[in-house]
Amino acid sequence: MSALIDGDLAAAGAAAGHPLSEFLVSEAWLWRIRREQILTDPASADWIARAAVAVAEDIVVGHGGFHGPPDADGMVEVGYSVDPAYRRRGYGRAILAELLCRADADPSVTAVRASIRPDNAASLATLAGTGFVHIGEQWDQEDGLELVFRRPAPPAP
Image (cartoon, rainbow, N blue to C red; front, side, top):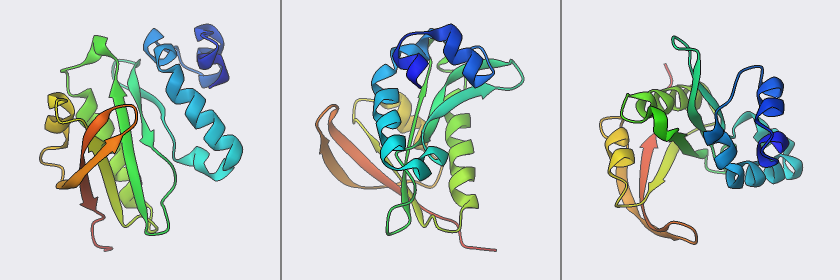
C-alpha cells in the first residue's frame, strides 16, 4: 500500500507478486485510508481492498474488498472498482461475486451492504440480480447522496 501511495508501481507490483496497473496508483486515497485502518486494527487486513486479477488473462482489472471486518451485527460493506480500461466486460460483476462468496463463507457475516450514488448506472446494474435490496439513502461527505442496499447472508447449510 505504501508503494501505491508513493506512486511506485514497480515496488508495489514486486510486493504484490503481480504487475499492477496505473489505475491502482490513481486510487492512492483508498490505500491511505486502508493503511491507516490496518495500523489501527490489524485484523481488518483480511477484509480490505485487494487487487482484482482476471486469472485467464493474467491482468489486474481493478480492486475489491470490504470497508472492514463484520461489525457487531455481522454486517460488512462491499467496495470495488474496475480500471476504466477494463470496464463493461463483466469484471465488476465477477469481483462482486467473489466478494459475496468471501462474505458467505464467513459464519460471522449476517449481511452485506452496498452504497452507490444514484447516478452510477454501472454499479447499480452490477448489483441487480445479486440479492441486494434497496433499504434507504445516506449522505456521504465525499460522494454526496448514496442509495443503500443490503443483502442477507444465505442460510447455513
